[in-house]
Length: 84
Image (cartoon, rainbow, N blue to C red; front, side):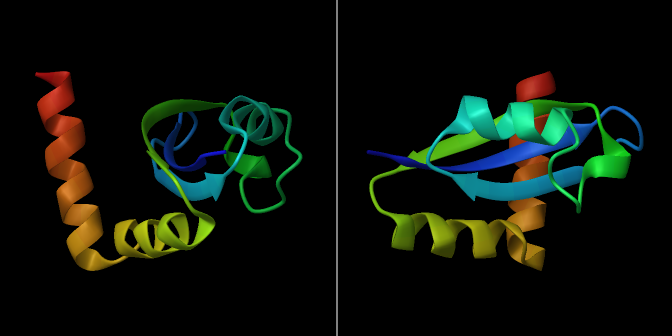
């Protein structure tokens, strides 16, 4: 089983949301159906990036990194490069 660190973009306010899960498709549906209290007001979302990691511990570390200043800067580079 893999764990996924994912980045969603709100189509409402254009901000990013970072999370982790072991079922990516189901989790995105939950966000878009308003089942997550912290993102309910910002739906709908599109998946803009994800990484698959072999353990939950590695996914937690990676999620924390993406929520840090250095991680957000790396995400900007990754997402900008994918758009060009």
